Image 1 (cartoon, rainbow, N blue to C red):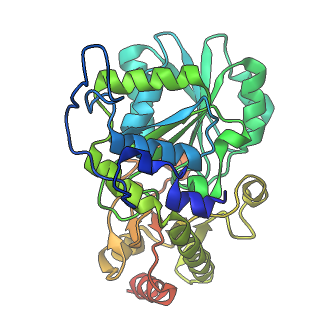
Image 2: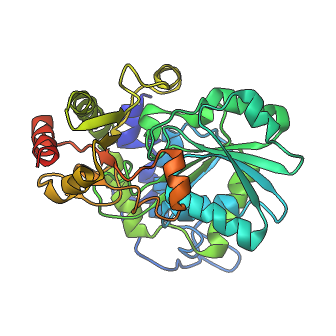
Length: 384
């Protein structure tokens, strides 16, 4: 079955949740479920543990990410809740490697677990050679955590190459697949053990709910993640599960349009007199383009770019009309944000500048509007 069809139908077994032929999965807005008798269950007891609407969403996402039959997906109340559940797999004294260009919330979480739980984290560049990554592995190393493309600098990590390293050292590879989505990239098939998503972004696609996912490759990991979700109560609510299910039905259409728009916008920005740098893997001059083409079938809708002055970048944020100056990404509306003081404010300023997250950098999430209107709004704001 093609990914486009899976987006619409999932595994095709959602009707087992009702007896009335509902095409849309019902919202089982119930905290608890009655037992037929002592010692028996319908399969659902209490929504903190499991819920039919959430289960329908989890099987849908697992199908999209090509999770093996003994693996699965768990839906969480946010992307950070999903990543936090993964971090709960580790113990004091464990060591994790992570790519050095990550969403600021992930870096903030890693800083927190280092301080409070004695889990150490070392960072490596996205283009680090295998030898450098291997040199950072210790006897206590338990996992490697990456994004590809990275947020916000749009660097590409070679997932297959890093998967070979983790196999040799018998550790886990965790991939944040939020930017690419399973429509374009399948980290489990590339060798990853765990995939995480902020479902608030492209999977939901309408900027109307918060959600997260952890998708795992094998039964033992899946059972551990499910236990963490049940114990912490971080599972996604039934109505939010339904909203994400509804959003996923149009994922393929949205990603195709968003990517078409992003490529045209990136080419426009490349030629603009007030733009000095454009970061988008679909551009011919992007250093990670070849690797991206080898592991993904599209480039996505995220672009980062630098203007010629700090003042101009700030004026762009204040001058856009069609485009919303807002955090988040992946919705049908085009959004622009300022990583330096927003998404990555938790990183010390010196470190931000060193990594390339400068005070002139803007991050654009292309939507599905007419691309001519997006370009006109950007051009006017850049010349203001």
